Amino acid sequence: MKERFGLLLFLILVVSSCQKKEEPITITSEDYHNSVDKVTEVMIHDIFSPPVASRIYVYPNIAAFEILAQNNTKYKSLAGQVRGLEQIPAPSQTESINFELAALVAHIDMSKRLIFSEERIESYRDSLYTSWADKNEAVFNASKNYGLQVADHIAAWMDLDNYKQTRTMPKFTVNSDDPSRWQPTPPSYMSGIEPHWNKIRPFVIDSAGQFKPTPPPPFSMEEDSDFYKEVKEVYDISQEITAKGDESEEVAIAQFWDCNPYVSVTRGHLMFATKKITPGAHWIGIAKIASLKTNSDFAKTVYAYTQTSIAIADAFISCWDEKYRSNLIRPETLINEHIDDSWEPVLQTPPFPEYTSGHSVVSGAAATALTDIFGDNFAFDDDTEIPYGLPVRSFDSFKEAADEAAISRMYGGIHYRAAVEIGVKQGRDLGSFVVANLDLTND
Image 1 (cartoon, rainbow, N blue to C red):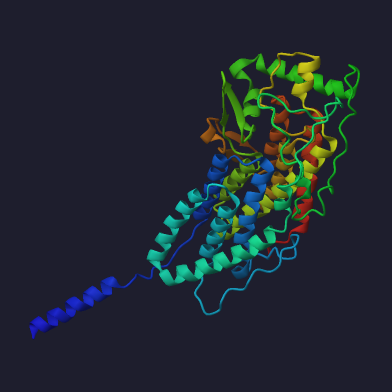
Image 2 (image 1 turned 45 degrees about the horizontal axis):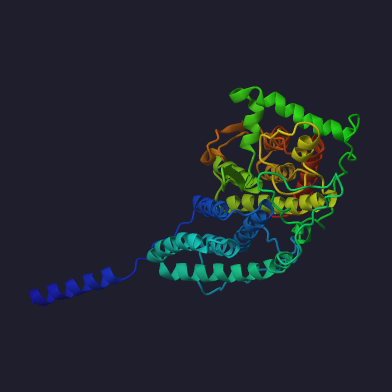
């Protein structure tokens, strides 16, 4: 009798040990930060241009936000608020869905569709999938399936934004007969990137030209002209700040906000790239810093990333519309031709026209979006550039950071004053419009 009882107890223990555990799956804001960081890491590896990088951030964030808006009364769907987006599919009422997990799945899946090195995202995804399935397979499968369903919905909407069409449009043609027009710059002399970005469907703004800035000063190399004075100012500032050597605060500012994803380095006959984040990625990093400082929960974290990335994406569309309309020559070209043929800017000149300054426009827009969420006078320590060997810089507000990002382009020798000052205004005006026309919370 005792032997049979012992055998029965043994069998019960074996069966119970084989059953899968049903633990709760907890998804935190840290998990979402990690997913965004992984996307940034892959984008640096793949070397995406600043406008394209903005597109890679915005669609995955929207996918995640839309799922959370389905099940969180604090937030409202973007459907009907951003161009062309229809309501996402409703979740099944018969399945137990973890909406945070589904949002993270959608973010990861959309990100994988937008980068080149898919295996890097897949490896990250698969490790998470295994962990979640081990905890609760039924909830994981239901949540994953819903997240992928929403990702398909967002992807179908994304595919109508004209991006694919711009891949087959003609390359930018340089007009060498007009001395005011942009010319490729050293050391790579690359063609102008993304000349058709103004054809990308905007998110909130009415059109690419809605925030068309005032024109730059009329081109003239006469020494008493406003334009020549701006050229000379770039040269003079460069001479002054580089003479200070390692003590130059202006050079430190220029380097901190460089955000050039592909800096060409020449060693003899060898040319290679130093990879960095883009301007949009820097501000996505600041969104992370603000979310962490305020201990934002998962939903508010996604909200912050989403509103910021929408403002950044529309800012690039607006800025690139002006860049290839005014098609203005860079300081490096004119200074070498007319002032000092051996002069080099502090920063490497990026491969597209000068006016307006992209970092200025994007910084103005992103700072406005973040101020709307976290408030004025939000002090923070910006450690975004630590991975690239640069120290932390501290700011008393997002606006102050945007102003520094803008003036950094003059210190770097890659923009004139008009492009910086009018550019940051263009970004702030656009950012204010985005904030005023997005109704994402029920507060």
